[in-house]
Image 1 (cartoon, helix red, strand yellow):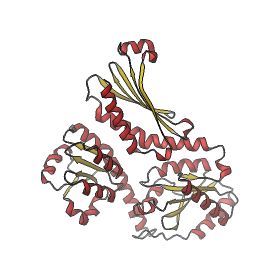
Image 2: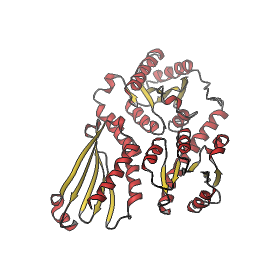
Image 3: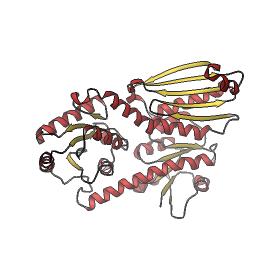
Image 4: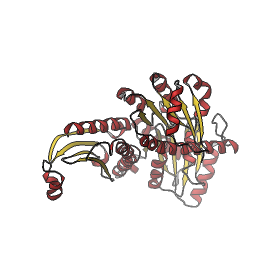
Length: 404
């Protein structure tokens, strides 16, 4: 499959430096732009992997990252500027490398970035199909009349005594300006079944009618769908049952407004939520595990494994805990993430020393370890993000090296 890579630099020598590291195929498209050309070339940055030279252009790099959020962007710098790296990650940078980064790590960072490009291509394809079939205009206007469609579908569902769930979904006032054109429709339509129905009832606000579905199935599907959005999108749920269209819409919109006000990704009626909070928070934690924790652990392994003598990095993740271990001859560092009750995220960091070596640990178990400098950091789930985690992991590795 053809991929598009865009190199951005005001230093032409950078192009000669980076191209041999990319292992391009004959089918790949490669573009070279300087920063001054970008305003006229932004259309060519869609569905592309960006490799940006930030040397002497850190401000321009951050501005560009904010403009192309959602597009995989790898940034190069001649030195390891921690402050700039943190700002770049917050602005949406996918990965960072410098002159000191081995070629193998540069190539490894390309793999997940190219995977993101395939998702963007899929979204563009869905948009083309929607426009071609006159379901939307180029300006994102949807041509379906909600009330008449819902009246007809609800009548069919009730006549057949079938299960169905109505969702109302919407970004909040802040994220609606960050959502890319047609992103919500393409993500939803690529994840629902062909007989499910999506209707636009206001700008960036939609109903989704899931046929032959109960609330648990609808909630699980929404967890999958919402993980693909670049900005927060919220949902309210209502079971169709014997309700009229007016009753159903009033209920689902009330639940949507509750979700937006409480900054949770989905909301049911209070009597429907009762007894299911544990399941809801568990699903939220599993989403964090898949989107934030496991990739961050993997990235640290790629960065530091085999770089230090007699030291290796391992990760262990399941539904109850995620742990990154740094293991040397006389010490084990533990970075452990748990979520008791799935309503709080705890990070426990400790450095466990065994003066007689790992053989003694294997014989006597963890009792042979002497724990030093243990500390706990707490986050509310909604406050926990990849930038904070990456920063803490870097500190963890740095402190471990100081203990050796």
